[in-house]
Length: 255
Image 1 (tube, rainbow, N blue to C red):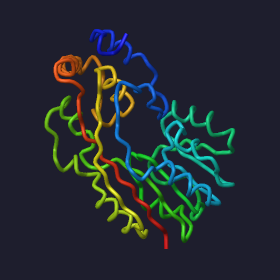
Image 2: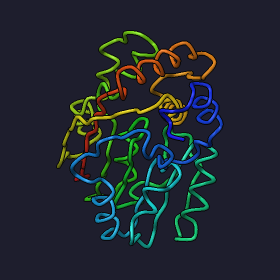
Image 3: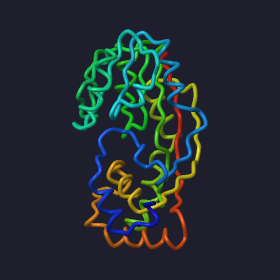
Image 4: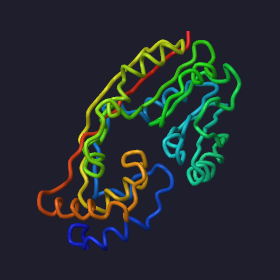
């Protein structure tokens, strides 16, 4: 039975019970779509990793993105804070010689000064630029794809109402450039794109909000059931729920 033919309660029960461990979104195949940035972060990351001698992947999630690289450097470490993701990343990456370190995503990073010639991070909650600069060796590079300003703000405001514009703009790439330069890094590449995102059923939205917890802080089905019911009815009447995702790519080098 297709999702569109199922009842609100059936969709809710399914999405509320499925595991959201790791950073694999394949459960959403056919139920939600997100346009991908043109630069292809995983390909760029893999190219840099193949040429590195010692690398660190910060906030690796379940390790899925890092595991997609065909060749890893002789020294490879990754950090993660959330226990379910930490366990998943360890199972996935340890056979490839990656040291996965539990880290609370707050300074300092548990590594020595100048330990790496490459640091990467896909969608960090926050980039601690002074720590990134510290663990990079001179000439080393930081490569990251990050969530941009007002990303899926339409989702946030559907559930929580109008938001502070300044808070929604906090992730602007210009701010990242300024913070990187203040930490002593030279920004050598900065690209920004706005991308189309669609949700085809309320279950897809529930799964997304359970997994990407900062979009609607404190989200639970019980607390937001009324809005979820409204969303279900809206999708049935008008078609997919549309939102705009924003992403930026930043590459910075330590002089």
